[in-house]
Image (cartoon, rainbow, N blue to C red; front, side):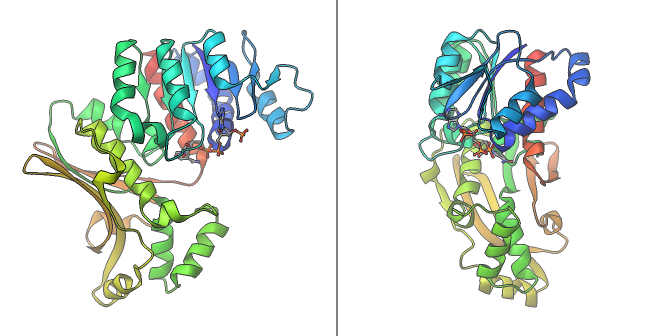
Length: 332
Ligand SMILES: NC(=O)c1ccc[n+]([C@@H]2O[C@H](COP(=O)([O-])OP(=O)(O)OC[C@H]3O[C@@H](n4cnc5c(N)ncnc54)[C@H](OP(=O)(O)O)[C@@H]3O)[C@@H](O)[C@H]2O)c1
């Protein structure tokens, strides 16, 4: 399977290491990976017979100095157009207008290349169009890592609940806010908890998307579109962040409960209602056990009733794992 990788940041580097680490296992699963190009924002490394991934990651860390396969100024779109491949893995940064990932995914699908992405941006702005484009070109578009990294959502629902009907989703989908709320429950102020989240690498210096609930809402849009065949947009989600959560945390303390930033999707009178907001949960609620960087989702079905999944997020390696798992599904 010939792969083109776009984006060699935290997730891209981990993916390269993971592919080498698991090469034997992947071969035994029929996923024989040959990476023929790797693009970052400034150029592309190309080798038709396969790049040595550890070498590429080392050269990237050195700013590509002395790496003969790297063509500066030759972008991802050029490589997708010119280089023969089966799959494009899209791991660029997430942005509100979906770019550059959106154009990269569209170009790949139009060239009849399967796509695996961890990037929410393109799916939030153009989920339906991208799925249609993939179908039209008879290729797959897989995106497990976009919603809560390696928390199994789409792969689990696709394979385990085909004959059931999904009624509602509730979830904790933002690790940063979960960490901050936990620190506040331990007695810290919002500002101190936020500073610790930044120091510990949970929050970006530009943290507003997390604390204002926007990142979680983007995941809600992807879930709604993928699981309920909706055509939801970010503005359809009612969003409340955690900047003013202090009094609710005090209320939780005196009533022996916990506060969680809960994402919710439910159908009311045939209409989908989507929200992100801090909520009080009782200690016997499974969400009460989801602490620090953990994320979780509760799915309610017509027949199977409630299914709860949770995962502990510690590093982009787990995100890379979700991408790799999607890749094994293309080989099937
Ligand atoms: N980190 C996680 O664990 C995690 C979890 C879930 C989802 N995600 C999503 O996964 C994606 C990747 O995350 P990350 O942490 O790896 O991000 P990152 O470290 O910021 O890396 C982004 C990469 O994209 C490259 N890039 C930007 N514009 C490009 C362009 N026009 N053409 C080609 N490459 C371009 C950057 O190039 P340069 O190296 O030249 O800057 C960089 O290598 C993001 O969308 C993120 O939201 C990440």
